[in-house]
Length: 178
Image (cartoon, rainbow, N blue to C red; front, side, top):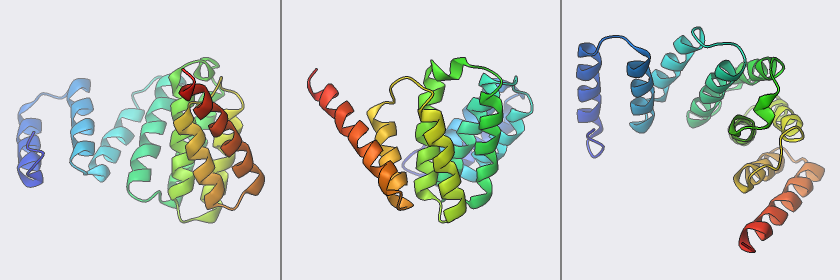
């Protein structure tokens, strides 16, 4: 791709897409490419279309998490909170999200959304979901804990800030001692 020239990259991408037969591979490539060139709205539309084809549980939860990350890139509009609620619905359908990377990544993504949105109601609600899920996963990674600190600070949650800061410091010390 022409990463130095976004307009060339867009033109190439459109040309490639028009000549490539429809497939999951094509949609996946387009989603990735649109993210790389900052065309988040187009990537969002691709992910939304793909959700209908996803199996309930793990696959749908992962697709909704992808949407949250994309919406966070465009400023975390308040109406995106619905996709966090959909993640919660999907998480209730299976348990192994707690044991795999999906749980950790989702907690981080939702904390990032919570600290980015300008809507207090959506921000606090997103934080509550991420906080509840964080209690169900095994040992959050440092980056997720730092995201939790930022989200708690953003919404003036003193006790949660203290909690996530302490957990982040403990994890940082563990990493540094390796």
